[in-house]
Image (cartoon, rainbow over all chains, first blue to last red; front, side, top):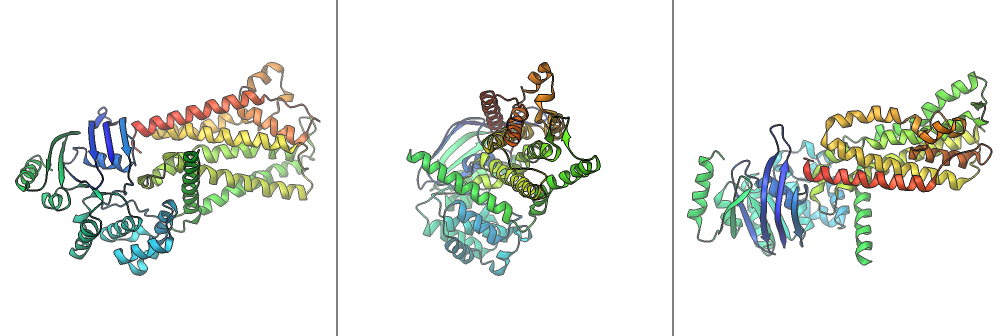
Length: 224
Length: 261
């Protein structure tokens, strides 16, 4: 379970402080799949960063009772100045896993071959996404944070993501940010909409495609 | 108790992984720059020794304190301050993304960098000390315990100052620049140029407000023993170091909660 209690995040800016999240409360139960909709600047990325723990809230509390992956995004949590292999070594040490095991699993998923010896900074966006995703699958988390990753890469990669997350790991929780209502519907059972740092809607995705579509159009109108 | 052991285990594992990453980094690593940190005290010492032989050698300020030993017991701790004090902000900014791994805490990034910097200074000092002993320029410390105690405080103070400047540096880029002048201003307060013994009582009392000055006096007591009077207050140094540490941690926590990074 992950619980956000009255979480506010304020960023300083030249034009005065910006409230990216405004007293937000949220609970993600084990195995629950939450999709987050919202236009640019609504606070989606901030929410992901706070749930992921890379930043701390200005006020409020976040309780995590399960292991949470780094956000799987265009720019993964892999370190650019290290090679793929060095990233694997680092992750294996931090999470106390067998290096051989993590290497084998990552290689199997990412299919990067000898490029694993090159610095991640030389990878294409797709390769980086595969690397980051493969590593997170190898570590095995209770909850996966997904930031538009399914929009990256080719069909083969997207099919693999689907099979790994929706079939092999269907007991895990997911928090996903996406502009695509079809993806949200496919991956998530609950959807929340975020606007100006507050939750403005919350509904089950099953049988609610029209509501998803309506939200999507509303977001597009606002220039998402 | 089990909780504490578990926390300790995770902290050491994480800090170990970060240190191994930093020193093992082949691509864009900063290892050459770090090796320079070992060499720096040697370079300074060569310059000092040049003066030493040119000027006929001997003692400083007629106190009987040998010049080489005076430099070796005063300069390296200030160098350590310079290398550690400003290392926290780049340590965080350059690898912020690893904070997504929940085992890794903000402070681990700072701490792993400090450990590397301190270790390099200590290794450098050790090598030079051994070389100087071999050249008979310095002797073994008389009271090794005071020597270690002084160094213990110097490291502690450097860590605390690093915390303070990391927190402030995250809030303001100006403070990051101000660290260098700060370090220069601190030079006399580290006891690089002087000993409390040579000061008038009122000046001495003023300088003894500086915790690193106390610690340097401890190091010099360790080296020279009771042959030359040294002045320090251990409990005062403990309390001020503790205070600096808590202030530093509070500022870092504030920066973490309210500023980007």
